[in-house]
Structures are given as structure tokens and as C-alpha cells.
Image 1 (cartoon, one colour):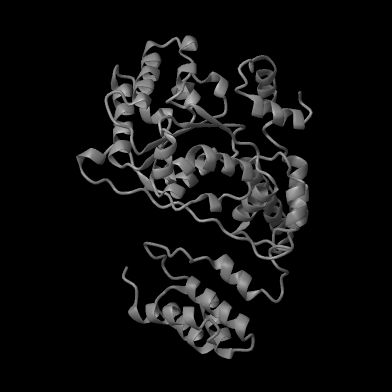
Image 2 (cartoon, one colour; image 1 turned 135 degrees about the vertical axis):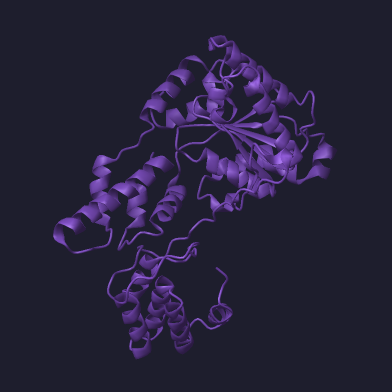
Length: 413
């Protein structure tokens, strides 16, 4: 459905004059007449924020809330959010969403490119809008990425002067749910490169030779779209230790992966390989040799700044009030990103159930998080136990010194 030119012009005018109440009320009336009642509610609510006594704005709001709901448009607008409008309307009644100021919302990555021709049918290459600036906290991880991976790629002249090779890739490891995939997308956005993600389900096939062919096609797609970040998720499943693999087919898949990383038959210039795993000790040793995944990065549970950003992200479109964010961040140490998302879901459930029982709809409050914290605890315990054994008995070459340092800080070694 094409945009009404008058509505588009008024919307553009409001960006320059956001406090113009008559103009905003006029736009709300046009939106309501066009069957876009949710957007009309939002505009009327903002007008009432600037002028609570505006009879025209109140009239548009009443018509929008009291009339029959229009049919939903085929393509909903990104800002079509009745909750935001309701919160704006009730701003003078309900307390602020966060104690200490509003929360920032990180950018999202762009949609995958459409299929274009016979050479682009198996895998979609995305253009990530994320950068490391959109990743909250994790200062040490960002510094390691900058030193070992990003700086040489951004500075080809200095790289040539120092004889720095771009061969090889980076293996990120750590507890599950701690943002390794998010970091990979941010690296692609930082480089302005395409992003191509691969898991074992994209490769594995029951027919002999098909898995190897799929893996080769994925690397070819990355080469055709260079510069491109090729992300190998759960690399322990795709490139597990061949000594522990009983299937001949899976062993040949690992061999094919080694061949593609070496670029024996093709040039990998401009293909930046990132891999992620929760169990680096299960990855075939050949994949860790120089020129392949020869650099490692430990991605630990989010620090305080990262936890704050994650919590704000998961609460950005929920009706919340008087959340003590600092206290919540302090009480979620050692929580993974996935744990924090689960915590927000649990708090929302408590508020919803309370609203259903009482018949009075209310906001999600800090007390709901206090209840949720009694039920939700960090999920990385089993991973830490396995990691402890590795750091104690399988770190003869110093590969897991950084992991050992973290475990010592937690008094686990």
C-alpha cells in the first residue's frame, strides 16, 4: 500500500516541529480516517503530552479508542505499537520506565539479500548494521578483536609493511548464550562486509558427497561476495575430533572443511572466518593449526555494562515502571545473555498473572524481578564444571590459560 503524500508531508514537517500540537492533531485525524488507528493513538498521545488540555487531541484519542478496530494493513509499520502510545498517554500517571534515565536500544542487523541468479541459490548473504559500538560492555573482548582481527584488516598498508598475513581465522568459545553470534555480526558490520552463517544443518546430507558439495558451495558463496565474514556456528559439531567420529561421511566433511580453510583450490582473500563453540576441546586439532582457526577468544558471561544493555533491550517494548536497573544488574552477576532474556520473560509472566487475577492491568515492576530472581539462576554451572576439568588436566600447552584465569577469579581452581 503506497503512502498517502499528505500524511508523509505532515510526518516530515513534525520531525522539524515536534511540539506543534495542531499539526500533530491534524495528522492524527488523517491517520484515523485512513484506518491507521494505532498510529493515530500514538500521535494524539504525543500531542496530549505537549498540551494535556487540548480538546481536539482528546477527541481524536476518544474516537480512535472507541471506534471499531480497522482491518490490519498487509505490511505493519515498524512504529505501529499501541503500548508505546498508551505509555505516552499515561506519562503523567505512571512513573518512569527506568530509574536513572531512558535506555538505549541497539541497532538491528539488516535483512538478508534476495536471491539473484543461479549462483546465489543456496545461502543468503546479509549486510549487518551492527557494530561493536552496539555491543554493550565486553571491553576486553572488543580489544582482543581489534588487536588480533580487525586492525590488520582495516589497515592494508601497515599490514604489508609489517608482513602481517590475513590467513587464518578466529575461534570464539565460552558458555552458551553469551553472545558469540551477536559478536560475529558486529564484526561483519564493523568491516562493512557481508555476513554468511553456517551450522551443521546447512551442510549435512544423507547422500554421499552432498555434504562436502554443500560446504564447498558455502565457501564459494563467501568468495563471490568478498569481503565477507563467514561464521561457522557450533564448529565442534561440524569439525569435531576425527578420532572420535565413527562415521566415515563426517570424517570426510571435516577433511573438506580443512581444505576450504586452506584455500587449496580457491583464493580466500577477503573471506574472514569466524567460528564459535561451547566446547573447543572437542574441535579437531587440525582446525586449530596456523593458517586455519589459529586465534582464540574467550567470550565470558556479560559484564555489568553488557547486562544493563541486554536488560534494556529485552524490556524496550514492554510496559514497565520504576525498575531499579542498577540493583538488577548487580543481582544478575554470572548470568548469560539467554538467562537475562529468561529473567525478563519470567518477570513479565508474574505481572501478567497478577493482572489476570486482580482484574487490574498493571506495569511490570521491580518486585516482579525480585520474584523472578528466586526462580531463575545462572545456567552456565555445568559448562563451568567441564571447563574446570579441562583447565586442570588438559591445558599442558597453555591453550586455556585465559579460561584458567577466569576460573581462579571465581575460586574454582
